[in-house]
Length: 347
Ligand code: KG4
Ligand code: ZN
Image (cartoon, rainbow, N blue to C red; front, side, top):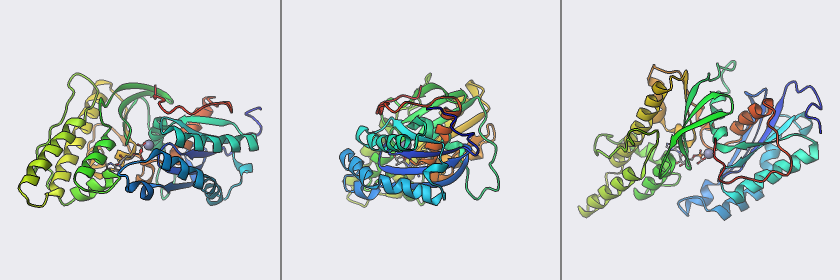
């Protein structure tokens, strides 16, 4: 099948995401103009388990994926005849969940004779920073290379240097918990709901971030992170406080924990940006929805910073379409026999 079945103007991608607990589809035009983005969250189903239950996740994806893709097309006022390529998350993620999105994407690609683009989920989070709020009158400037990306989600915390599109040099990452995972675990410890990030952020709003001095693992001499120490420190503090029999100062604990994580992420990212003399900073992944993290990065003036609009920080398909677009224009399409890659690294 020739990729040039028509002249691709305007070029539209239908993207599908199902790597974890969100079933999502989106239509994107010319790489940055978002025509629709539909996300069906499974949070309510997993809340009772305090985290994502993989089998429940894949079965729920099966139930809703057809409707989600259909809605994305309808909201974009498009049919498959207006689509030029299908992008889909190939990994990393939960195997059983990835397979559902992949099979849907292959079915559509085969049925409509469209090229298929398998996209890395971490790459999608990075390209979410190419998206912009729909109320913007025209596309704002795109990030410029070389750039440093801080990618912080429920499964990953990585510092990635990009010298160009799709060119990733991993400088370091977490040696234990991911930043989002630390938020989720500490929230559980404090009796807050899943997902922990938004719950901690809410609790922290009325708390004193200096009430407790939780450790910040600096991992000197490396670009790595470690968040299990701060989690254990919160656990110890909670145990000590519980002995007093008084109610836990949840707000202060949440604010102090959040400050510890945000400081480490900010300090290390800024140090790496100076060391590698990048032009731009980029912060993405579910934890980039954190207001305190957004505030520290947007208030520094050393580097222009790109952070996706709030609704594209956590998992969605608009970001898959954005990454898929750059893969397509660089000739990176895939055949219909590709498999999912649950442990696919970025570089
Ligand atoms: O990117 P994402 O939706 O899924 C993964 O690829 O992992 O990230 C989900 C993670 C969860 O750990 C969640 O607690 C965290 O992002 N998160 C936040 C906030 N919103 C979501 N962490 C801190 N503050 C938030 N406001
Ligand atoms: Zn994600």
